[in-house]
Length: 63
Image 1 (tube, rainbow, N blue to C red):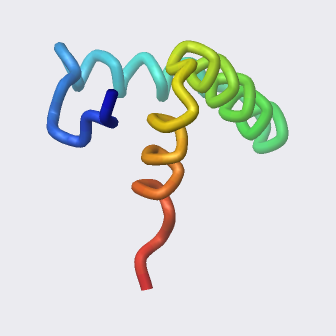
Image 2 (image 1 turned 180 degrees about the vertical axis):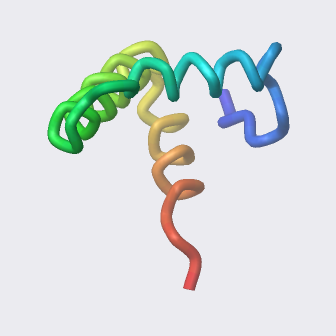
């Protein structure tokens, strides 16, 4: 399985709004912790180490 990097999210604006709303009222530390938990939950959902490696490479900053 390959990582999907093309737009693949239905109602992307709604998903973005939900992400922002989840952070609403949180401190920086709480927001960082929420992000960490969300990342771990999504890594578990992916389940495929090769896809995870592709995602990590895609997320790295480019020089």
